[in-house]
Amino acid sequence: MKKYLLFIIAITFFSNCIAQQPNPKVWTKKYEGSIYNAIYEVANSLFSSEDQKKDYVNYCVEKLKEKFPNGADNIPEDSLKNAMYLIGASYSRNAKYLTFKHWTPEYEKIIKTDLLYNPSLKEFNDKTKVFFCDCYVSNLKKIFPNGVSQRVTKDVQTKIANICMQEIAKNVKYLKN
Image 1 (tube, rainbow, N blue to C red):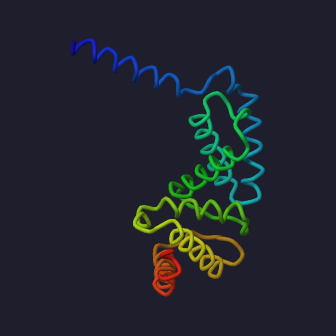
Image 2 (spheres, rainbow, N blue to C red):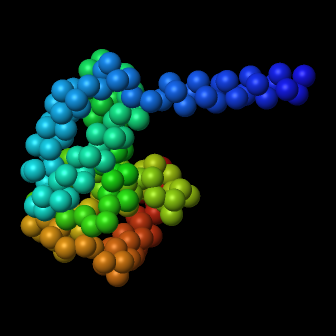
């Protein structure tokens, strides 16, 4: 009985591993190239460094292949946008460096999405999380009004977080509802 159960678990595990591989019939070089080019256009408007553009695009393409092994053509636009925001947020957490040319609504949303999933905010309700994210981006824009051309140091991140925590304390009644 144990051997049979282990066999079933092994088959399930391996079939899941195989199922999550990008479908080579969909993810052809041409298809992947079209996805790469579309994401590169967005990266070109955000980042000034060619290395960072390529790094971002490669990261996004790999994550899309993992998330949508059968391609992204039949994915609803809203779902695809949400997936890209999550991928962008993941990239911002894992990037060696993160600079961008100027502020855009997309980049703001990427930062906010990243912050929403920050473990230090897990105790807050959704309204407070959104308030913190808006506050954080607003203060980041005050410090870097023309975009971020250098790595944001831990000191700056901590300073902004502290300002936003003070704002939360001032608005606690509003945020409870």
